Amino acid sequence: MLIPLVAALNGPLRAAEPLNADQFDRYTQGRTLFYGFGGSMYGVERYLPGRRVVWSFLDGRCQEGSWYEDAGRICFVYENRGDPQCWSFEITPGGLTARFEDDPASTELYEAEDIGEEMLCYGPDAGV
Image (cartoon, rainbow, N blue to C red; front, side, top):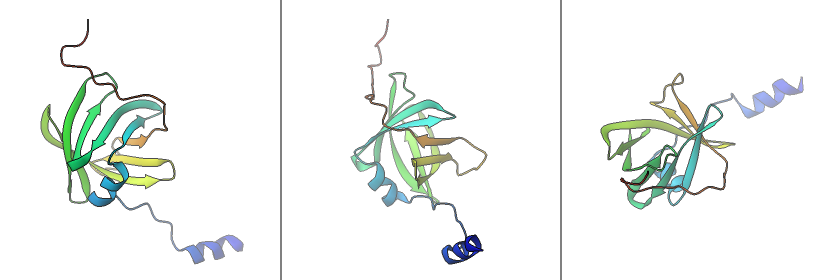
């Protein structure tokens, strides 16, 4: 009977609340976060002052952009595409998680542990 008592004292279990713009900015500003998806590395984003970002799919090609809050989601606009990419972010015991368009059936990224790598951005004409 101990489990029902503890549950009653703690109240119903709830999912974490999505971060608002101020909370997201405090968590990310000045950091470079690597993101995983389905057990693989997905991408990396550097968070700069003034709600500016630099994103890469870990291929050395970086896209500058900015973010803003809209209807409780954090939306990103990048230089190579004009349509916003909106995500809901939560802080979990494992770090930051992001769900595309706040849709439970959509892509969910998670903050990967420190993998000891730098974010690499090559120039537009770099390569062979």
